[in-house]
Length: 475
Image 1 (cartoon, rainbow, N blue to C red):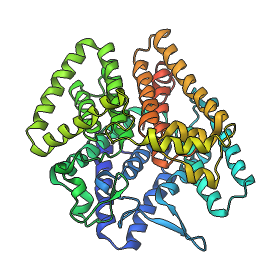
Image 2 (image 1 turned 30 degrees about the horizontal axis):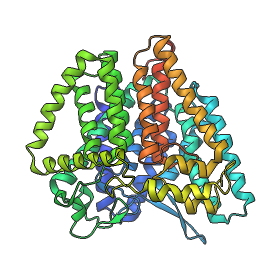
Image 3 (image 1 turned 90 degrees about the vertical axis):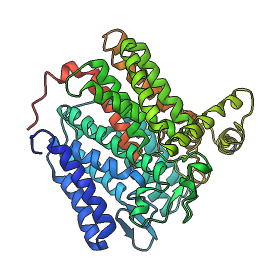
Image 4 (image 1 turned 180 degrees about the horizontal axis):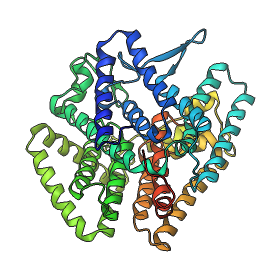
């Protein structure tokens, strides 16, 4: 990678823009040539450049503005498996290459949570065997492998990104956040996603097909429920607050304030209550850790909100999102449906738990029954269904271990930025318990990249003083 200042940012934006044009304007054989060329470049690039490609693919898989949407007409390339009627998707190919490269050309560094992750992976292997013993068909076995490979990414991605690349990775993650927030604002202001501008018509919002009139993107009909790359936004919020607390010179304070404010605004405008509660939890840490800076943050936030209110559609979206959050008052007073807007307590959870109690110790593993009853909207219940009580304890041990290490670093070693990783992990637990499944033995590639980077960031900041004294300069 060229060491000129800003070169990686320009290349990042350039490759993303070219990928959009190639995907929507060139014939399919040229599309395949371009996107498989990106995979090959990642596979053979030097380790010092891995951060660049991982963040670029992370952005592509986040489908900003429904670009590269997996079930759309203009999705990323797939490989069809002859005779099975099934496809290997582009993000899955990337996951396979990540695992291959991590064993082929690893970076010699070890994260502090390695043994705990190995335990999770070993239990996942047990769940795979449980599926085999139940007599699964070949399609179910392939589906299980599809979810197992992303789990491996949690432990192998830190073997691909040298510690000295972390700050460069963060820089590109912030750039991605601007693209993701901008895509959401485009939805709200123009009433249709960016992909529609390029001719995409096969879209879904909240599990429902979008009609030709794009009424799902009309704020007059209620809050627009789109958000792109929510993990990227949440972790950008966490890291921006870490950097503000750290007081380094890599990023200017006003830039970090802008990142934290825009990502928070984006999460709020999604009207997704679990994610909103999670972001508020993280901001509470800023109020605790940075009293003086928090007042500047509030002042800047008020200015941005006032600017948003000056745009009629944004004004309506914010009001609609606020109304949706207020439905939690009904939940607090005993209305388990939160004024009819919440079914996970009254319908989704009982369906999963009734099945779980048929086999509570080990769960159903990766079996046809698991896939029939799994529900990503109820994370804890689906984790129990998949791994049983034993599998739940294994994951709980991993989470408690992380919280313990973060707290010890914060209290005993006085690494104050670890407070934000404590809150970030609690935010993930909140999302997992209230909105959508985060922790599990079955992950998709985007979630795996996201979680692996969050844990790796925490490893970097927990050991920062040591790694800065033992790493070569990039170049």
